Image (cartoon, rainbow, N blue to C red; front, side, top):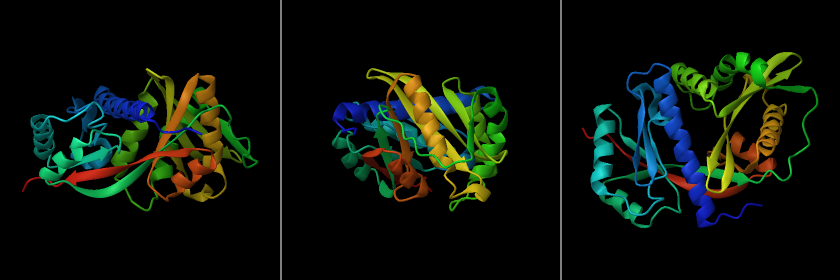
Length: 275
């Protein structure tokens, strides 16, 4: 079991901020004209196309290094406004206590919550549904982008297909990310990624961009992908693995079954674009 001390929370938030920065930087390297990230208050604000919404246009890690400069926050707000976007900040409960008061003064309201789950890789679950094959390396790389887009194409909350393709291409292009593709009876059934990063606490793995094609849902595909990525994180020398999920959704249930514990719940503080 992982007990969430302030230093572990700081490690997880630093890793999440690093992940968001790399997302924006990789999208720019793939040809985006104006994709970038800026540091603010111990965290990162990412800027990409407005079409991509909050997924690639939000702030994380704010306040993890102490109080936040209000002028710096105002500059970030103005930068999002120039894109026609409001601001969304995923705030860790371990952030400096002054940050919530600052956000309140500036008109932010909470519009969502997200959970960060973590676990060690000392023990990897061994129960996997039979008949599921997990591909890695070149074979998975060749199938990943299409599998990811199709897996996310039918969700309760629909996202633009351009965003799904961008996220898959970014993951595929990242040097720190390994691709995993699941097959059932020779047919592609799901896909997922594992990012491994260096931190002051050692190597940390982030599980992300996991999806299952609609025809294969409820058959243990994500459990198999979770097991494969946990084993890969262990083999890569990770001390800790984490994943984000909305409360009570299918992903949250899957990671809980795989032995992840809730590290903390983040509130999303939103401020509409100035009219």
